[in-house]
Amino acid sequence: MRFTFRCVDPAADAPLLHSWVTRPYASFWGMLAAGVDDVEKEYAAIQSSGHHHALLGLDDGIPAFLVEEYLPASSPLATAYPVRPGDAGMHLLVAPPSNAPVAGFTTAVMDAVLARLFAKPGVDRIVVEPDVRNTRIHALNKRLGFRPEGVVALPDKDALLSFCSREDYLAARALNLLTAPIRLPATSTAMEHHCDH
Image 1: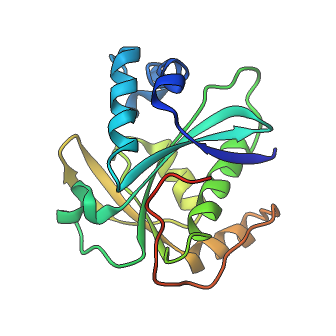
Image 2: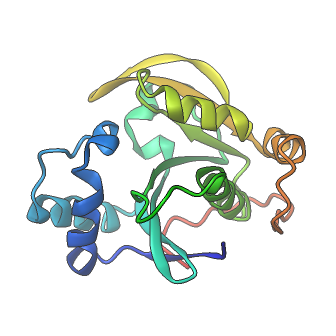
């Protein structure tokens, strides 16, 4: 597995993303009834927001997952908890497997996403807010170092607010014997907000 990232192109990628977000396994993504046009509009709005952006994760060049990175202070979380400088929010959706599922694939994807975020200057802590009913993602989050803070009411769901510090992430990697190379530079004060590679 060799993961790379590229910005979502709302028009070009809408059919592919639509084929993912409308499947039953993606029910917590909240777009089961969306049309292709709805998906394009949603991601056009995300990419132009200035505080939220979406990337496709590629596995050896093949689209394999969708990740959204956002600033909690500019999201509904702004009133749900005391946002700290250096907090970065994240959403993740892994593509439906085209063949037999590969053991450990989703963990490897999550590891790549967290390594990317922690490599950004100024990011100290990752924030997630999955639906309280999404027990599968809670288990994955815990495995990669997230600590639940509690349930918060958001406009579209009751969410399990969870945080992952750089230290907890590195400890979880060691515990899970994840050996892929990662880059974790020293923290600085600036945080990238734009969609980048």
